[in-house]
Image 1 (cartoon, rainbow, N blue to C red):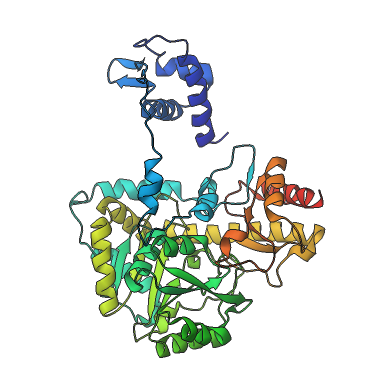
Image 2: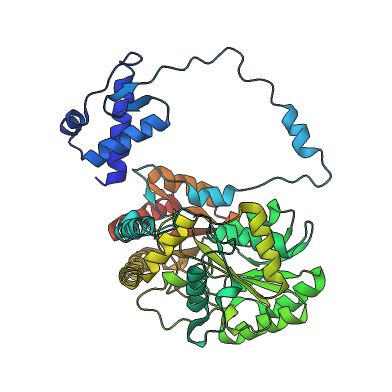
Length: 475
C-alpha cells in the first residue's frame, strides 16, 4: 500500500474511532497507533493532520491529540439562497463558467478504479525525493521568504528563456513572465489579448481548459479543425477573415487530445497567416517535457522562430513534475508583454518566492535530466502497453498515427455510440476514461474518448483498464 492510501485508510479508521470518544478525550499516543495499525510515524502524523484540518481533533504539543468539541449547528443557519440566481444572471453580459471538462480531468477516481483519465503523472513517476531536496535547499537560501519581483526571479526567467529558445538563444529573460502554472498563464494571455465579447480561434478538438477560460472571460471560441498534421492552415486564414479574431490558441506539439504535431510546412503558415491578420498566436507548449524515449528530435517552439512578437508562448514545469509545483512561464515581446505583466500583477501580485526558488533548485540539479529521461522511458512503455492492447483487441479504435509524446490516445468510437454511456459503464467496470464531447467548442463530428496513461500505477493496470473499456463497449 502506498503512503497516500495508507494515510487515507488510517484517517478513515480514526474517524470511526472518534465517534465513541467524548469531547476533549485524548487519543492513544502515536506509538500505540503505529503498532495497532502497522503504519509509519509519518502516516500517523499525516492522518492526524487530516483530522485536525476537518476540525475533528485538536493537537496540543507536549500533551497529545484530543477529540475536538462537536459543533452544534444552530437551527435555520441556511437561509434562502434563491436570490443569487437573479443577481448572477441579471447583468447584460451575464455568463456561466462551465468547468466540467476541467473538473473531469482533475477528479481523483476511487482507489479501486483505474485512472485512465487524469492529466498528471502517477506519484511513482513524480520526482518526490528531488523535489523534497530542492525545497529544503530553497528554504536555506537567504531571502527565500522575501518578496520576489513581479515578473519572477531573474535566474528562473533566464532559465525559461534558454529552455524555450534553444541553442539560438532568440529569447532573453526580459521576455519571460513567471506564472503560477500553465492554466494561469493561459488565462492571463487570453484575458490580456482579447476584450470581452471578442472571438478567439481555437483548435477543434481543443483542450477543455482553454475553452473554459475563454468562456469565463466572455470570449467566443471559434473552432478551426485539426488533422494529423496539426491545425488546418487552409481554413485558418478564412477563419481570421470571417470572424475578425485577433488571437489563435494552438498546441503545435503533441496536441491535446489528438497528439498531432504541427508539420514543418504549417509552422511557417501559421505565423504568416497570423501576422497578416494582425493577430497573436498563443502557443500552449504543455507537453514538451513529456516526449517519449523513442521519439525523434523535437522541433523548437514557434516562439523560437518569431522575431516579430506574434507568438505568446506558454510553458510549465507542472506536467513533468508534480501537480503542486505550479510554476509556468509566459513569453512575449513588446506591448503585449507589458499588457500581460500588468494583468498578472493585478491578479496575483507575484508567484510565491519559495516556489520559484524550489523550481530553480530542481532544474539546476543533476537529477533533473535523469528524471526527464525516466519519464521519457516510462511514457514510452505505457504508450506501447495501451496501444499494443488496443491493436490486439480493437485496432479500429486507434488513431492513424500514435503520438510519440504526451500521455494520451484519442479514440474514435463507432458511429452512433453513446460516449456518455460508455464512460459510465467503463467506470462501473473499474476504469475512469474521459468523454470527448468537452473537447469540442461546437458540435462534435463523432463520438470520441481520451485515454490517459500517465495516472495509472503501472502497465498492468493500463491493460486491465483497456479491458474494462472494451468490455463496456461490447455491452
